[in-house]
Amino acid sequence: SDEINHLGLPRGSSPPLPHLPLCPSFPPKLEGPLRIEFDWTRTMDDVHKESGPGLQEGGRFQPPDCISQHKVAIIIPFRNRAQHLKHWLYYLHPILKRQQLDYGVYVIHQHGNGTFNRAKLLNVGFVEALKEYAYDCFVFSDVDLVPMNDRNIYRCHDQPRHLSAAMDKFGFRLPYKTYFGGVVSLSREQYMRINGFPNEFWGWGGEDDDMYSRVMYKKMEVSRPDNRVGMYKMVRHARDLHNEENPHNAGKLGLTRLTMDADGINSLRYTLKHVTKHALYTMVTVDLHGPK
Ligand code: UD2
Ligand code: MN
Image 1 (cartoon, rainbow, N blue to C red):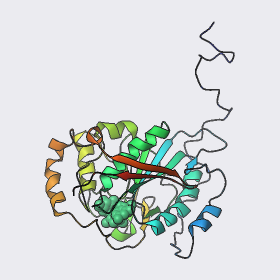
Image 2 (image 1 turned 180 degrees about the horizontal axis):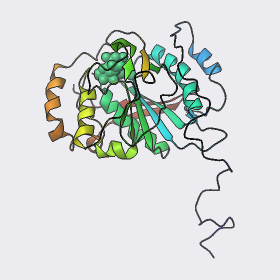
Image 3 (image 1 turned 45 degrees about the horizontal axis):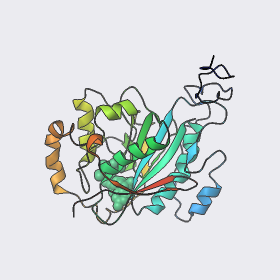
Image 4 (image 1 turned 30 degrees about the vertical axis):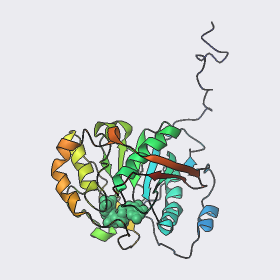
């Protein structure tokens, strides 16, 4: 009939996938504990040359030999941390490939010198990544955090996940039980259920606790890897200019329950400046309409 094309598929549907099996639930080539040393003499050019085969422009990858079960957008809030980004790319691409993810790396760059806003940048990343591909999972990661164990898979689970459960700077354990900073993963549905992240936390601090509260108020739980698999190294750094601790943020936390349904992905406003495809990542530069 007219509705069916010569491949026996409804008209307009995509061509058949090459005949590949689904990737296994446990990627076979993981190494476990990794040695992470931040080498400040390494250049971006070195990182590019050593990045290995299979990467597509913009930092996209699909396993060559199986169909991944996870379409993951990795979202990194960013401004003026080129060195850290280089370390991150050097270590993460090989790990993510071994984890057999269908992934893309999105560096969300805040334009201008206004007060930094990590959570709002993460919201922008969610929207912009979905414009490119039907990602079903989102990993939100600081640019300065590298996992020390590749069994910590950058995928989503049936509950939101806090991946950076054991960071070196906190003595490889949680600083407090409800800590949700660093690296987290949420499926598209989990993220929509909490209305994304707050847009109104300008400057350093508090936004991670707000994100945690959103998850709790929407009756979900946070899952974590154990303290061995969840180990992370953070590049040592001082607090950035224009990201000073904001004393008003702590006070906002008591209001999360009241504000979260109105402040989030449904109220996100920004101006897209440009999207640039680099070999190892996609950079999205954005004006957040910060307070003057
Ligand atoms: C902690 C949390 C972080 C977040 C933050 C409070 C850890 C490891 N992480 O990070 O998740 O909750 O406190 O906001 O404890 N950034 C830039 N340029 C800037 C400022 C920030 O790129 O000028 C990005 C970058 O990805 C950085 C992230 O924002 O890793 C968090 O900022 P930070 O690293 O200065 O804060 P830190 O380490 O205290
Ligand atoms: Mn940091």
